[in-house]
Length: 234
Length: 189
Image 1 (spheres, rainbow over the protein chains, first blue to last red):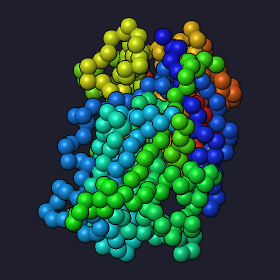
Image 2: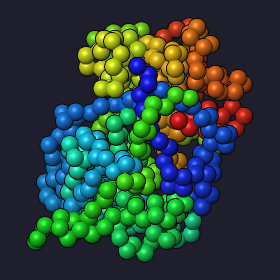
Image 3: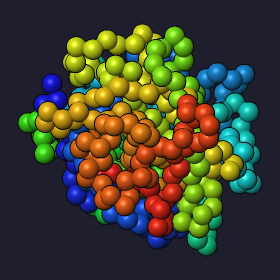
Image 4: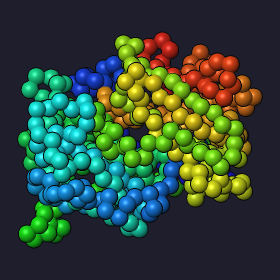
């Protein structure tokens, strides 16, 4: 019964280390003792399951639900949720949160001197379909200043949270926009050692999902941990 | 085909915007059967300061030791309406608190049986990827033979075992200490 295949660890250098001093908040929050390596058991291989009833029919559309339209450049973000083997991850819950077009979050601790938008809350969610496809409608967020270092600005980004098909596929990441000059100055982006992996965090403009007279399309595929072919018993 | 895994990035300081809708501080509300327990704790950073912007996620089996997941094919009964997932933000003082039922024993590596435990993921500003830990229950005889606990250096094992908070046996304390001599054990799985 316990002879289920486990999940592979992510390919080396695709994931940031906990301690990355250029991102100052890691210094007092990163673990200082070595992680304890454990085998994956039924506990780690399983994970929460969310059915179609978990999300509302319009939760994928962050531009709706208010009296008017939000300010900013309307965009469609779509792609596939895949595993390392290129296999679709179906029915995966994806949560999205972001700043508004001015670079301001609707949150008590955000004191950036940029206007809130009464027509934008900045959170949404959806499930990938049977082939792993997902789609959000939102607005392009603005760049956001923070106090990590002198003249620090976060590049425009969307926060994305995925549950995958088990605890071992849980992932929270950020999606960036192509050609953003702030990426090179951003310690969150540069915390990823592998250049190809960093590139994976940058969406691409997608003419084919762009809707004429309506919204620009951006494509962003998300790759979760892959499955071992054989049961993981150590 | 072989694709590079998408890199983890921090949830940042505004995580509650995205996570609030699924906040679940009672993981097993009645009529889910089982021994009800409340777990409360405090999260502190390397300076001993409270972490006020973290989110704790719990994954657990039901009282029979069965996970609400299609790959758990044990011949044990599922609990109707029980997903086994909780999400709890820390407050301004770094406190978090949730109520659930004590899970049953679940299969471990090989033919072993794991002691009742809750899986924990921790997210916060300053964490570029989640921390993974476990909460075990005090005075459970199965702790002595748990294969995962056995991999933890003996002098650090106590960080994974909740303690009875006071006279009430149903209220347990489990703290998260991110750095230092009493640093909580975090796993690489």
